[in-house]
Length: 264
Image (tube, rainbow, N blue to C red):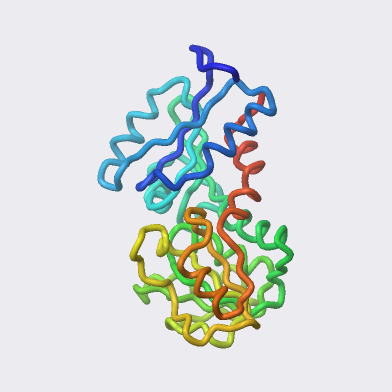
């Protein structure tokens, strides 16, 4: 695409806030390289207005799909006409195909996160994993870590009931993986994952206690902007290996493009 015309296909990304998103830049570059006459645009919408916006977007005949990010992934599940097994399992959607006014959703965060770990030389199989969060991305990551063969998975969330519900679903799907609910202290784990939005806004609290983390542990993020979150900065001070959020997106780009039909 050299310019936007009446033939240009449109995709959007839904978020609140929107300033931090990196997906449009990456997928627009990919479409240019592949000769696709298409563009992805950021769409800033708050949670209360999401259902009305999605209802309106169904009427756009040149809108072919959406990427969905914080805080809309869980809410989008019920706004789709059909969803994949991965979306149902995680209770969230982050990619939506639109055709003839119908929305088909899936969840790619889990596969993207594990793929990003492996691309960074971190193999989760056999690791004792601690995951903070029980929202859309965290749900997907929990199932993906279990599928990857972690030795143990501990879930921690401010609302304990959500962590318990996620534990029960992961344990049922992967009975060979011990899954438990933990507190704010990630001691005794090899891989520590922030699956929350904490760190996205200035002044956010840390997603878990860092006083006793150390060089034997790897700390991984889902947040892409800032690249070095307060959590990663604290982990670096304490000698931990760190893994930023961007590889999760990089690993999913081809999956997103394929699912959304970004072809010439």
